[in-house]
Image 1 (tube, rainbow, N blue to C red):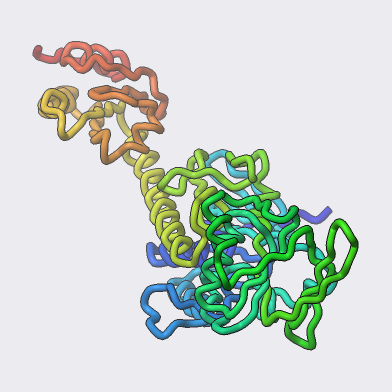
Image 2 (image 1 turned 120 degrees about the vertical axis):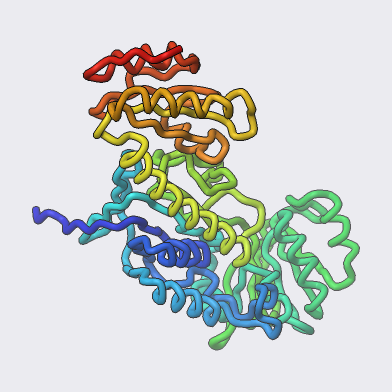
Length: 419
């Protein structure tokens, strides 16, 4: 079998929606060699949104496609490369990450997962004909204004369905809700249910699921099926909103990164997944609000995080763990007077060893990730390593005698340090 081609990058971004594009922009602007891989359409689900009125900077509103084209153009301006293909597998552990596609294996120092998600659909007859801009939508926040004075249907009765349906009622003439349960029973919280039932613009068709979608080019009718009687109920509508769940695109990351019960990737506020050099952002991660604005924020954090990780890795390998001299690393806190006052002493010790020792200093607060790499979780601490870069001792003993004794075991010519 022919071996796959290999290419190397600083950063590989998986997913080309708002989060992935933003992360790529930040990485490209930082002069990192950046590749973005998207399996279908640059811009992701946002490109299917007819009108976006709540993204800052566009007082007259914009289209999802138009906004994503601007993101794409800006990323290309900063040298980001794009590859339209499907990712088959990933290897995320270790210093070099691997992202494998059908023809090529991409090696990277960091990987940003921005693969997004997809709305769960009913799988009813003809549904695929009307998805997104042809009558079936999945975001009331995005498309409510476009349905002013229209009749719309909402599929579902969970919190998202009822809350979004209530929001739609501020614009639409009528909101018809298809509920799978018996009359009065919903999956949402009681406050939302009671408010919806009291809303004069909202009507409910109980014990129903979608049988089929109909229309000439654009959706105009939803045929519902009564689960108890089998009766088909035709309902004329202008548009339909489906709120029956959301599924993250995380299949290839199972057992590779930490995930929630719903298979969303778990990150901290820095978009870190827990694997060094691997970040996740946007709708693919466990979060509350899924909007273009929040995806952009996630992507910015992930992009900055990737840049910082690469810079710190290079600093760690080339400066902190240099291999020209025996190494002494002093971890201190700039806001703690006792550990701060030991700095001059450490510098005196370095001088006393006549060029045999290299001192590096880390502020535990500012260099938190560097401390984590060294296994230093308190301050003050000292780390000693050989010219080969092998850590031989990590100690909380920071007095002059202890430090000098530890260094004398490592240098070629021991010295006597005045105490």
